[in-house]
Every structure is written in structure tokens, then in C-alpha cells.
Amino acid sequence: MRGYFGVGVDGISKPMNLGNLLRIANAFGASFFFSVNGQISLKDAQSDTSRAQGTMPVYSFPDMAALRLPLGCRLVGVEIAEDAIELPRFRHPACAAYVFGAERMSLSPAVLERCAFTVKIPTRFSINVGMAGAIAMYDRLLSMGSYGERPVVPGRPPEPPPLHR
Image (tube, rainbow, N blue to C red; front, side, top):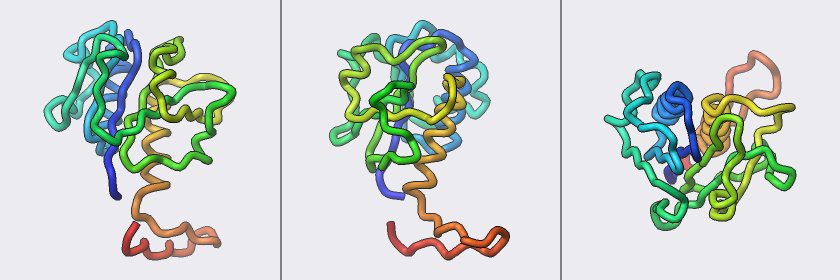
């Protein structure tokens, strides 16, 4: 898979959720992790049993004005919003940073203003931030990964993956 991605959270306040999202980002191969407007310290993320902070850069920004992303990296907000693109219909940028809202809150207006795209997971109601992160990263993996097409008939062997993507 070409490109890279990072994962971030806006205003998270629960250490367990922060650790869970850090662990999921690490499991899916995120290149970096960031927190904006965080209400807890990254060192309090005890549920990150993968110790993500030792395998990828982890940044903490006091507010959106301080957020710095690599050149060419597109910020993608994951938010339940009327005008958001449904995740299964979204073409992921090669270089992206996905930002998720905190518990019981939406992404802040300052974050939404900086987003190049806003996507939503088509669920009937809000889900846990770690679960939302896993779904978004899995969708990226499926849509951009080097996997062949699924077979038309259930149980048949899959098509070989393409040589280049």
C-alpha cells in the first residue's frame, strides 16, 4: 500500500478510550498518532497494551492552531454529520490523518474547519471512538490494500492480488 496515515482525537477525556484508539492505530500500522485539546495525558493510556508510543511518533497539541501535519497530508474528520461522505463511498487519500471526536461530543468547529474531508460511518447512532477508529482503518486497508477482489461465489478461493496498486 502506498502512502501513510495517522490517527488523532479531538478533546478525549477517558484514558481507556485513548489507550484503545492508540492500540488500534498501532495494530493497523498508523505512521503517527496525535491528540488535540486533550483533557488527559498520553501516559495515562494504560489500555494501550501494544505500547504504541514506543513504535510510532505520538504528538499532543494544545489546540487546532498548533496542529502540524506533514506536507501533503489531508485531514479527514470522522463525524456523524448530514453533509459527511459515507465511509463505504469515500476514496481515501494516499496520505491522510483521521481525526475522531471525543466521548459524547462532536469534532470541534476548529477541527471541522481544517478538515479536507468529513466522513461518517453509516450507523444508526454514535459508537465508541475506538470502534469508529477500527472501522475507518479497516475500510482504508480494504480500499487501498493490495488484496484481490473477493470471489463472486461464497467459499471459492479469492482472486490473486494485483501486482501494483
